[in-house]
Image (cartoon, rainbow, N blue to C red; front, side, top):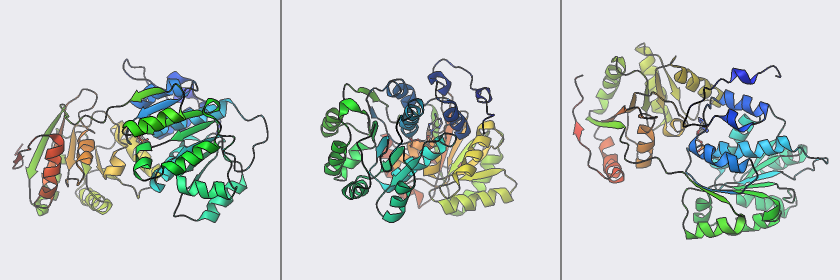
Length: 397
Ligand code: AMP
């Protein structure tokens, strides 16, 4: 446990990126970051960490997929580590609170928090609606909690029953504020915020994908002199990606994919499907044809996903077959091809997918298979891209 050395986490310094090493983070936290396979900070981490780690309030305009969760979690756990409590911690009195609009997001944050604190003593508990109340209460009553991740409604239940007290909260994180607003949660969130210490006596980190007037008003009323950070959504005009659309029958897709990955130029490729079952089916098919590839899908345990990703990063594995959700975590330079085995229904997913290639100034190619079924998803993509796309027959070469 203790014999890990920072030198094992060797990330070369480069001009335009920050390393986690540059922030003097706690040693056990660095070990977890190294294991997660993060090397350089994402833009939001580079911009937010200097302020968040210095106890400033931050308001951040950023979408999911930008690495904002790690940005606030790293800051929260560094504070807990550097300023351990002087008094005996009390049950149900978290030092940090993260509010998220949905159960899925809250559980994802909890899971990320647990990964990051793997070598620290800090404890995270998640309370969300639609799941067993008693079990969540048992967790709170068993041991003190450092970070509480919650959806607003369920947290109010706990507060009303005096099972949680927010008077010791040092850091308050509000995630996806715009969605909380859309979902009508703001009155609940306001009640919760009023139970935390005054904003002068806590740090507040406030995130939202969009900042309209109403969101801005909330941000202003809950933070003090916040540093406002804007991370542009992934650019729609992906200049560095040569986008191809191939007209192809559903039953020709497997062969076309096999031909593509067998070509010498396809050095590192991600194949996207719309569903987990097609991901697994495709991997089986390719493996049968002696193509070394692995699946990256939500039903694969996190540990396995990470080792797959690391092998892909190291170049040991040339092909990945992924779903959209799993694919968002892929930040690997040098991906030569993105292949859309199926076109996504959501045009934003299309842009996210093709953005996995053409990174860091390199050029990349995306090839989308367009069967009769896929063609239904094409108009939305064209509208989102702001251009008509041309479907061609597959290139011979
Ligand atoms: P989020 O925007 O918080 O949903 O994060 C999106 C994905 O990026 C998650 O799968 C994270 O594990 C991953 N991630 C976060 N920070 C980094 C980083 N510095 N390097 C590589 N991947 C990261």
